[in-house]
Amino acid sequence: MTTASRQGVLFASVFLTAVLAWSCSAATSQEAGITGTTGQAFVRVEPSSFFVTIENLAGQPLLDIRVAIKPVGGATEFTKLVSRIEAGEKRDISLSDFGGRDGTPFSLRVVRPKSITVTAESLTGQKFETTVPWK
Image 1 (cartoon, rainbow, N blue to C red):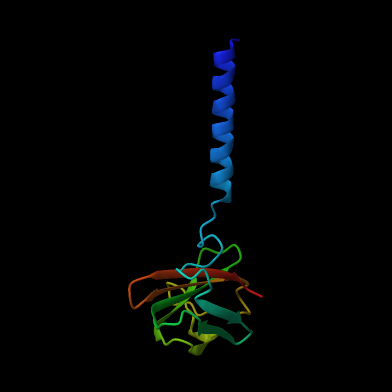
Image 2: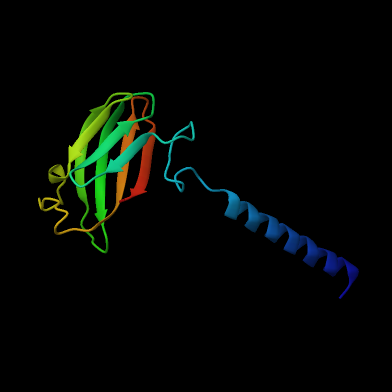
């Protein structure tokens, strides 16, 4: 192997290693469960045995809020749509208000929840999404 070919192989391996390291470390805010320009959570989600409490932390009104309970091993999502939550507002959503696509009501006696996903949009059209585990 000549010196020029060794240098080419060395350059290629260093370049490939750098690209791989950059791609592994470049985590987006959505992967962390938070989307927004501030890097902070836009809502606080607190599940309980009777309610899912949503608190708006975005500092601006949120529109078209979709709260979805995802069960363990199930394909059915139980959703509730909220049209608007003002900045700083805290809203309790009863678990009986959640329903599946076919109208099946959510019940903790039947379904074991895995996570809650909340999606929303700001007045300026900015999209938000977060997923939190059920505690």
